[in-house]
Length: 232
Image 1 (cartoon, helix red, strand yellow):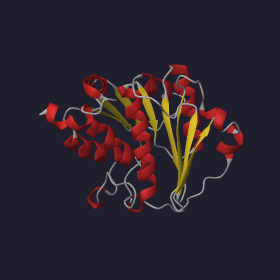
Image 2 (cartoon, rainbow, N blue to C red):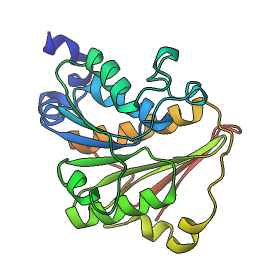
Image 3 (cartoon, rainbow, N blue to C red):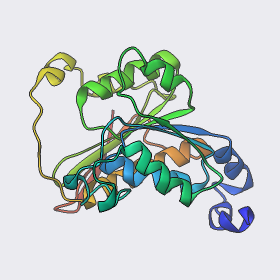
């Protein structure tokens, strides 16, 4: 059954049997189970990643549903980790899922990050991303970055071979973290698109594929269907 399940991936020369074994033995921490996490988590689980940590302390709300497709109307008010776990476990019995129903803080970030091979950023604020950047540097873990706007998004890979960090891209940490948070509109397909890019980068890294977004920033405007990749 397993051979049949992953046959379309294994036939890719960039993955093959060895790459699939690497995916099965790898672990990923997802920080955030909102729009980005809803796109990333099923792709990683479906591809055969062996262990996935789900980190989110929030609950499902009605305003989440247009873009956070892991959840149903019946799950409004329930913890996102609990609801996501139920959906993902039904998708992939071969994957071990671990719920971390806690907010990422300076007290727990390095411990959580160090327990996984790779971190995927699916959060929605600067403070958490800087915290991830610090924790991944301390634990010597790479992390996939993704962020979205109303119609646009960007993605990259930090703390990998080229040594580029999030703080190099956005050096104004104090100003960005202290700025008032605003709630913006967003088209539901935007996090799905950026989440797919993030998941692709994660799978490439775990399976040993090149090239990656290490040292590069992918930017896309889905309203005008324009994209570019910028060297960092």
